[in-house]
Structure formats: structure tokens, C-alpha cells
Image (cartoon, rainbow, N blue to C red; front, top):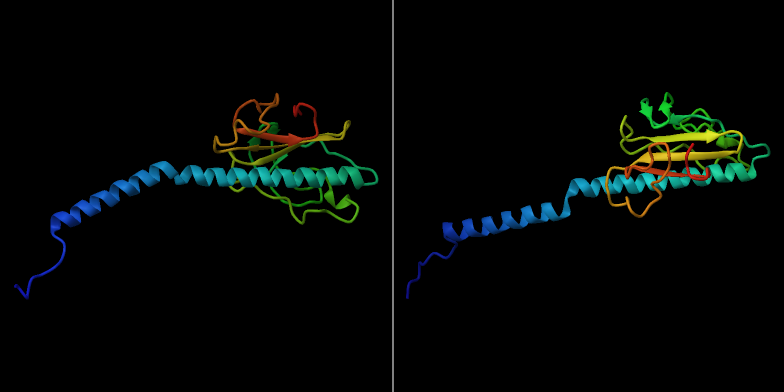
Length: 177
């Protein structure tokens, strides 16, 4: 019996294991696509943010003694947005932010302390607002990055919103402000 026999892995065995691990890691990255998962997470945040702002505006319109809706357009980034040139990039709820409605006029105060900003907030990805002062209707838009929500959300409209990358919510029938 050999007492001093060395136990361990040969170089070939180690190379085979490393190769298998590399193949599995590559397959996992291709299947999971971390960039797409991050884009979907940002889109989920956009949808949630616009839902919160829509609810806050709805509460304002329902409870304010004499509600007013400013026409806009406004967006969260200083860029050309889908309605024209946007110049306001603040999150103030007093009507000077990207939503041109003074939410502090809501009975009991504004339900939002600040307006949410787009997770990316650049010239391509931003929130935008436009209102109709006569009918007291409004529209909120966001540009989506991923295609996950393209068939499950309201992505219609006549202002460029027919593209699968525009998400629109609001009270305007047809969302065509």
C-alpha cells in the first residue's frame, strides 16, 4: 500500500470544470439578460409613478373648491418632449414643477410631498404632462425602455403614443392632448 499517494485534481479535470462553469455562466447571462431586467424595473417604477401622480391630480380635481388645470406642456427633463419644447425640470407640487397643477390646493394638502422624477430623466426618458383647461382633463406620458409591457398597457394616443414605447394615462378621452 502506498502511504504517500497525493490526492487532488489533475490539470485536465480542473480545465473541464472551469469550462463547464464558463458555459453555465454564459447561458445564465443570456437567459436572464440583466440589462433587460433593469429596464423592466425602471418601467415598473415609471408606471407606478404616473399612477400616483394621476391619483393625486384626480383627488385635487375632486376636492379643490375651484380646480384649475394648466395647459402645459411640461416634462421632467429640459428637452423636447412629445408635446413640444419642455423647460421645467422640477419636482415641486405647487404648480411650478413638471405637472402644471397646484396640488397644494387639494383639501387637506397635497397627497404628494414632491412629484416623482423619471428613474433615468434625460432627453429620451422623461415624464411629461399636458392639460386641457376648458374640460379639466389631463394626460401624463412616459417613454418605456423594455417591451415587457407593450401588449398589456394603454399605449395608444394620437400624439406619437401609438408607438409601443409611450405609456399614457390621464382623464382625456383617447389620451390625445
